[in-house]
Image 1 (tube, one colour):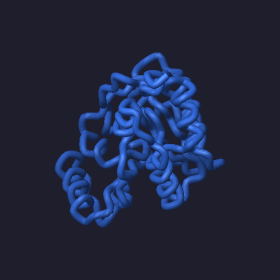
Image 2 (cartoon, helix red, strand yellow):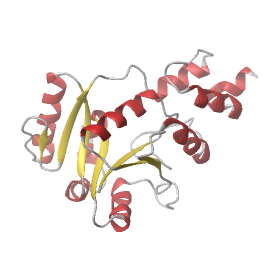
Image 3 (spheres, rainbow, N blue to C red):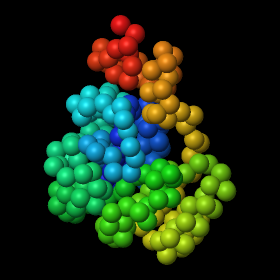
Image 4 (cartoon, one colour):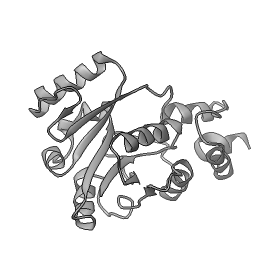
Length: 209
């Protein structure tokens, strides 16, 4: 079985997350994709992080395909959300399956700073969602060669796959900022999630009450 690993803060999950993972799941012919919200982001600071249960609930609304499974593997862990710990846990759970770690190009370009990044590359294929331009792909190829010592021919190198796609026009941080300023985020976030955020008073909705 081919299993995708898609981690993130998902604060909140938006349509760009779903679009990216749907494209990669089809492209890589994945049998299952584990959606894994972080408990403690190790690569970025987030002052308005919604609590674990709220983010889990929103992820279950955002990723509806039967092959997508929202996992609490990182939230249940007492330590920080280092990816290698998650990979090792999943190898134990799925010893005969192939793992595909799905990340964005911004995260890939600091991959050499990830804890035990060499072990991650040995244990799974890193799939990078890239902007759909030749220049963007060139930057990723150059980084892989210069920082990781891996030559990428076309879109594939040793345990690395690049997937060019059209960039989504908004981020979770921008969505939170829009909410805090009283702007509508319809079109960017599923209506069910918007209703949930309003009911829970997340990201500034409570200020309007």
